[in-house]
Each structure stands twice: as structure tokens, then as C-alpha cells.
Image 1 (spheres, helix red, strand yellow):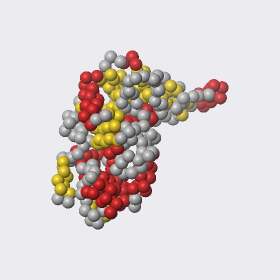
Image 2 (cartoon, rainbow, N blue to C red; image 1 turned 30 degrees about the horizontal axis):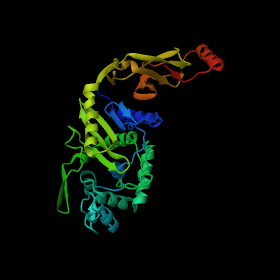
Image 3 (cartoon, helix red, strand yellow; image 1 turned 120 degrees about the vertical axis):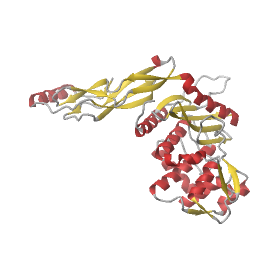
Image 4 (cartoon, rainbow, N blue to C red; image 1 turned 90 degrees about the vertical axis):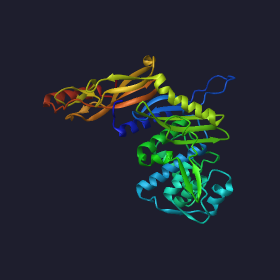
Length: 393
């Protein structure tokens, strides 16, 4: 696999999911068969959208909401608002609603004790503990409602436009929704911004208050190589899951939802990951340094400059379907002289229908100096007479 800068891969993932969010789910004719379940598959290593279906259909998150709870806490740790050693108290509400008396997944935090943030995160991510989620919420913002406001602010900041969270546990609540596209975006955010904490998701076990519990993520161990992230279910939307795995030296993010059983969810996510080697192939579109397009230059010693990609342009595409894709080069022009060599001025997009499945930045192949007074005057006249516009090739 061609090495690429992780920062661009992350941006590519976010751009791809933004394109998905802008789509409207098609409404088919009334039929007997149920609608196809939502799914999403992304090559996180390069930011390539490999597969999506009903990815913007609203679903209830269930316990996958705890991914947002974790992301909020990760952000608070990174900003220095709290530390791993910061201890939060166990309130009666947290104990009754999420602890031993609740009958749900719990880390068995003792009433009126204090628990360090790092241990709460282990309870949250290893034991799927509702008490850990509530304790973190109350410790950071005083209440579940106030913490939900912070969850939604982060969702908005990272572009999860189809999501709204009502509590830190994912308990079914009116108005709490997300989408597979948004869950993919959230997974990409965690993998990129908080990769140093990603290992928490795959810890095999955690003991608190003398009680040993193995990792409760049902995806771990059931799907080869999966090392995160979460699974959930809800009364209205069925079973969903967000997984990540390395296959063929690529980090993949897969999301499935709307399944009637936990086994069906696992089978769907496994099939999604297994499809990589069976259904996709690497296609080298352009070699390193190959000119991909030309950008016009205003007021320069020459009227155009070649655009190229810094690395070879290689993308995963479904086998036998290359004709379904097209390329577009986008830049805002004309470039104003002087133009620096190696300046990023546009991007190459790989499109399927109206969706951008892959994008790579384009930079100038050479420097262009300012032109003579005569050539600059001629450019000014052409601009006055005809104008310039966004170039799309």
C-alpha cells in the first residue's frame, strides 16, 4: 500500500462522509420486501469510501452513543481540562441508574466512592458500563443533560449532521438519533485525534471493586482482527455495530445497523470486512509526478502551470466496475502570479454518481514568475471581457 500522510487521510474520510450526508435517501415504490439495512465501509488509511447503503437513514444509537461519550472525555483529557488521575464521585443517581441496582452493564462503582477518569474509561469501553458513563457526565458537567449538550456540540464540530444525543449511556430517549455515516465519522475522529487512547477499546478485561469482567464488546473475537469500537441495540432500530480492523495493510472502518439479532449484526460486519480482498482491487490512476491537469495563471510569465499529486494516485475500486467512476480536477482559478512551486491549489476527485469516494490534493509542478507589463495588461483585459470561473475538468 502506498504510504500517505495520516492527516490527509483523515480529512479525506471527513470529506467523503460530508458528501454522503448531503444525499437524500431515495424512496422506492411500495414493496413487500423490507428496506436494505444501512452499512458503511471506509478505507481509513486513504480516506476511500468503499461501500455505503442507506448511510444517512436515522437510527437510534443504543450503546454506540458511548463512543461519543468517550470522544468527549478524550477531548477533555487532551485539552488539560481533566487528567487520567482526576477522581469523580459516584452519586446516588449514577449508582441507581447505572450501577448494581440497575440490572444493566455496570462496573460496580461503589456509592459515594470516587473513581479516577482512566478507570472510568476502562469501565465504559471494556465493560460497557452505564454507571461509568453517568459518573463521567456528572463529573464533567454536573448532569447527564448538561453533558448531552457537550456531546451534541462535539457532534456538530466534527460534522455529524444527522445525530443528536440525549444521554451518555445511549439509553433509548425521544429525539436520540444517529446514522451509519455519522458513526463512521465519529470512529474516524477517534482514530485520528485520539489514536493514543484507541488501545482502551481492545483491553481483554478489567477488574473494579474486586469484580472481574471480560471485554463485553461482542465484535471482539468474533470477527478476525477487529480491535474496536462498539456495538449497540435499540427497540426501534435493532442491532448496530461500529468496527475497525486492519486488512491487507489497510485500516478499515465498518458500520452496520438495523439487524434483528446480535448474530445477524456480527455476520453483516464480518461480510463487510471480508469483501475487501474478494470484491476490491488497487488501481493506480497516476504515477508519482505525472501531470494531471493545468491551472491557468493570471499575470504570469506563462499562462498555465501543471498540477500533480505528491504521491502516486492509487485507489481501491470494486472489481469490474471502473466504468462507473469518473475523475474531476477542481481548483479556484486563475492562480495569481507569482506562483510558488509545490503549492497546494486544488484536488483530484474520484466520483461515483454524485458521491466523492476519494480525493487527493494537487500542487503546482513549478514556480511561475510575474509576467511583463504587457502580458499582465493583456490578462487584465481578458479578465474584464470574459471573466474567470471555477475550473472543473
